[in-house]
Length: 98
Image (cartoon, rainbow, N blue to C red; front, side, top):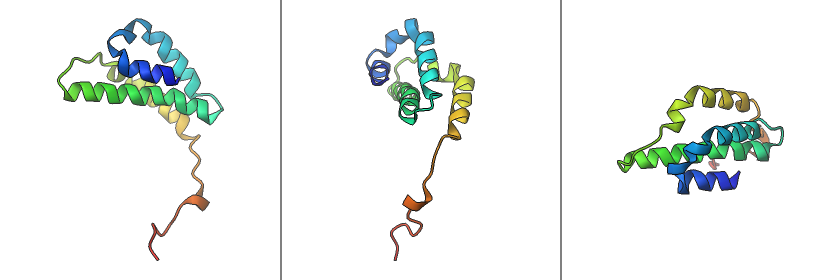
């Protein structure tokens, strides 16, 4: 998954040829029960979003991978939001204030 994240940045122009396969693999990974695998699957999409945003700001052409798959990504995020585990014991309710 880390390699796919690198590819999203370094080979952005060429991932279109393999995009459907990448999307399926990262989608499956994101829905895995192992949270580390799931995080890596989602990390690809985060990196791709950052790459498209960066290119847009620099006036470079983008392939619109994110906007063209927005509905699928929203569903993927909604499926995974229930996996978020917030441990109340680790939170500092006082925000460092005494």
